[in-house]
Image 1: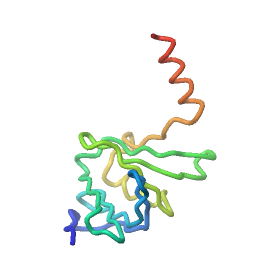
Image 2: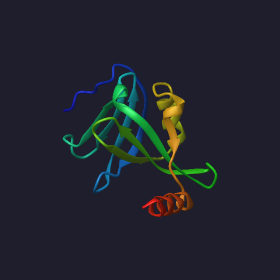
Image 3: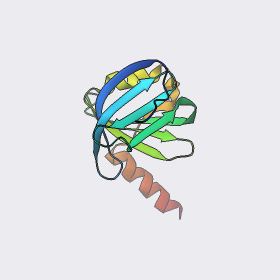
Image 4: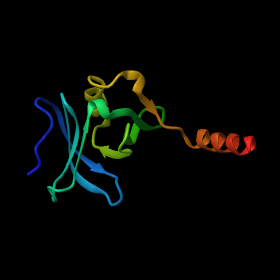
Length: 123
C-alpha cells in the first residue's frame, strides 16, 4: 500500500487520470499535496507536493459552465491531466494551497490558432 504524503485531508473525490491510458481512481487534496490513487492497481499513483506545483490549468467551456479537464503543471516532473465529477470543488480545495494567480484557463480553440499563426509569422 502507498503511504499518503498528507496529514490532513480536505477533499477526496472520484477522478480519472489522463496520462496515456485513462486510469480511474480518487483524488486526495490535503495539507501537504495533491494525490491520485488508482482504484485497481496500488502501484499506479501520483503524488505532487504543493511546493512542486507551478500552475493549475483549467479547460473551461461554455463561459465557465463546464470544466471537462484540468492539469497540474509541475516545476520538474511535467504535466498531469485529470477530470472529476465536480471540478469546482477540486479548485476550491486547491485554492487553499496554491496562489490564485497560479490557477489559469487554457487557451480556447481560436486562441491556440492565433498563437500558432503569430509564431509562424515571426519565422
